Image (tube, rainbow, N blue to C red; front, side, top):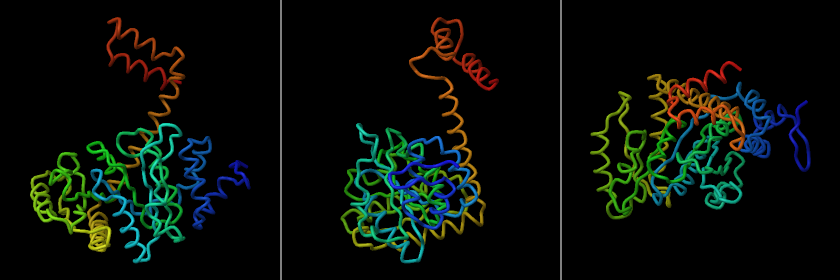
Length: 326
């Protein structure tokens, strides 16, 4: 029996999975910790979770810093809970340069849900990942999915253009903008207009909100969309008071219905799984290259490229042949 160490008890992975499925927050936390720590038990954890995944709706929230992502997440969770849905939140925060852990206190920001047994909130460090998402985010999503969450909300760090990565993980992506940010359409500069499924103008009680809405509508009309039949709506909200947030929930539900009817949901999830498999395979190959301080086949090939005896493409082919034969 494979066991997972703890201060008070030792539990097998199947036991942790079963307890997580029953909604035990401590078991969910331990499973996500195994994911973040790259535990040797991770393969067993993912195998145990696999039969129970694929049910949760994944909602991503992105936008430039200062648009109110955390406040909007808090308000969205409240609205989702009012409809009876069980909610998980992954708040992907900047990493501590010392511990690698998350710096921002998500439980401080979302104290309204601290005592709700049907809301699970977890910080995950981005660990320097420029896309705003930790490499372990897909596996953490699987944990919350298997644990019975109806909706999992991913709130990312505000890092601008590279934050488009969230669209690869979410079923529905919310793009937040706000007036008074120095530019009516911050999202246009960040390059994220193309990936939004629902656009939210937060802080709609401020001057300039209607201008932002008008500009957004014009920009969306000009943007090339790959999906036909879904026109991204624009919702005005004041997350601080909750105004308009239930309209956001309605648009998320409408998008889910459209995706199921059009087959887009299946396409997105297959693409997500493909990216996850590729990331795991590439990580495995890199580990086979060995310690960066030790001489490897990669070093020898690199020296040949520098010397002009080979080129990067030939060297890459040679490297792949070396490790696929093993």
